[in-house]
Length: 403
Image (cartoon, rainbow, N blue to C red; front, side, top):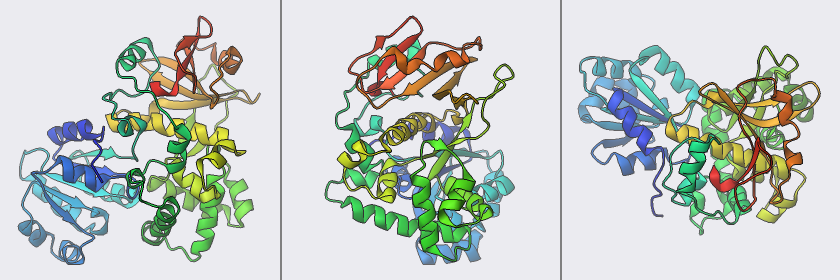
């Protein structure tokens, strides 16, 4: 399978020039190892999936590093937390930057060791699955912000996307670009490996089938306000357990939360975050859809399309090293909701996401809910229309290709 150039490469190289150690995190099978093996060819590569390497890393970190000279990539480093203290010892002896690159898919345990041993010495890059930009070989790296400068720059690198629902259904895992891979077999194996390896390493799961049921219930709620009590009721699992399991999915990069926008002027906003899966292919597998048409025409099509677009926007932030905390949504006690608010240099850009190709000004009906904020800029309807157009003086429609 040919290597697809990853947009995170620029951020990786920048981090290597600034930090002594770089950690690449992200969900299982999103291409962390492939990225480093292709872009850091002058680094020795060691994986702790190799039991002999793992045993030495755990029992004798000094000997491990004697056998592997710098610069080095250590894959699946979460399996040997014993290495972190010795890595600190190594990098503190030298001012050299970018000599050690680590990967791992269990963010919770990784972050605990990083904060204890390598604070101030390490740059952290989160890698997700392939973006549409990467699949289409679009040479554009800016994080999505629908202002005039971004739009003009994006116009110069615009590629038409066809078959969006195929991209939504097949998901963002690099393996799925190989047409010989069976979609159902891949995701079945993915979920099984995730539960048996990542989840078990983070917590004691007594009933794997119940955890799978929990994942299915959560997938059916992607793009919705997070309601732990509702999920507990539907799965028969205690609220405390649900909250613990949610933290595992978030730590391992399967899901993420979009925070509500709060402001002293807007006093009646909700405080509950919305939950999104990072990979829509996984959502489709978990809820039982077996082809793109079923996903496109199903009752969840709107939430699934929104999940896909939000995750694509998030990837533009992850890949460029931008702060994901500049993304919000808006919802108030009157049920008025705006899918996305993007904060940039003191300005706020409201964005509504619609799966339709037909666009109208009525889609922006909730934008006035935030009109009291002086920093509000031109609103955007992000949809499947075929060209950029203004619907009013303060509302524009953008095709999905502009993400």
